[in-house]
Length: 180
Image (cartoon, rainbow, N blue to C red; front, top):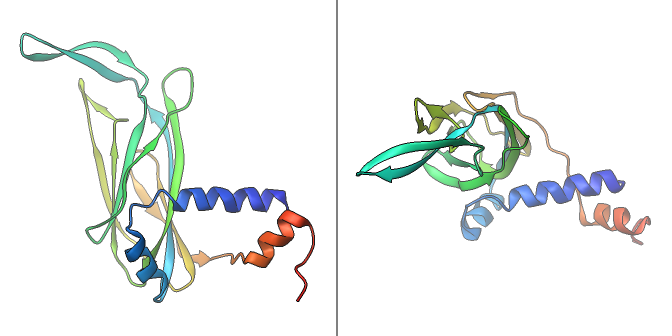
């Protein structure tokens, strides 16, 4: 394992921290047969959003601006796994790009994944929440990837999960295999 793999591992660990699952629930899932779900957000069409103020009791659009952030929430069979994680649009002019992801353990089965995307879609002169649902296959020790492009969800067949051990981390940091 080299520096690139270590950076990837640290990045995935940071994504795992985005999960809103209570530690006790996560530990329960990890102690039972489970797979992993990786939600990849790649919204390349984030528009300007309305900036409003209240005048005479009515909301009035005063300007169109780059969104400060979008939020993503993910539920699995009605259970909250990710709650309002912020994703920051990039770019100098619309359309902006919001690119991020989250990864978390899920018990085996074919649950319904519901994704809510807020703050980065507009209908008329109001911000709109996009909500999409999809059945996903969660298989033991495999990763199910779910892609979201800002409007629709898609998934692919579960793939093998690369196992990284503490010995692999030791070797990546020190350059030596741990003595047995």
